[in-house]
Amino acid sequence: MFFVRTAMESDLDAVRDLLEVTWHATYDDILGTAKVNEIIASWHSANALKLRMNRKDSEFLVADSGTRIGGMAYAAPDHDRTGVVNLSQLYVHPNLQRQGIGRDLFAEIETCFPNARRLSLEVEPENQAARAFYAAHGLTETGRTEDSGGCGAGIPAIVMEKDLPGA
Image 1 (cartoon, rainbow, N blue to C red):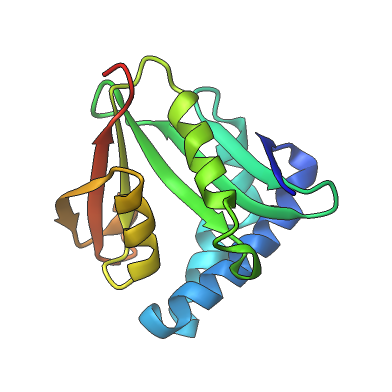
Image 2: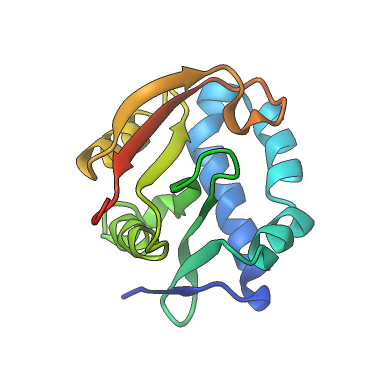
């Protein structure tokens, strides 16, 4: 059984390992192994994870069984759109998917920003499992981008959003 809690610096190696396994399992066939390795080295480096963890207005969560980290989520307010929270990461280890870990992480993220009106995220168009997961949690497609995360990686994405409770 996994419980959701705030990530600690001592979790970062396990989170990085989780992201590496999950990204290869999810994106090697879509983006190619070389591109996935490039993204892991950049987006999921120890430094990048530490920067996210230390951002004061963000939430960096892990699903912890007491012996392993089975999932993680990261969200932060959108600097350009007042009242919007961007869910930048929600990943569950491939061997642990469909056990409620993603659901629990998502539910916690939804409650972490009481002043937010809307939740937004970007999902790779070919990642059918993620698209179905987010649709099942009330998100709908609101647009598309050719540069997910706006960081120059050139990865296309579908933008999905939903109103948050109390919005």
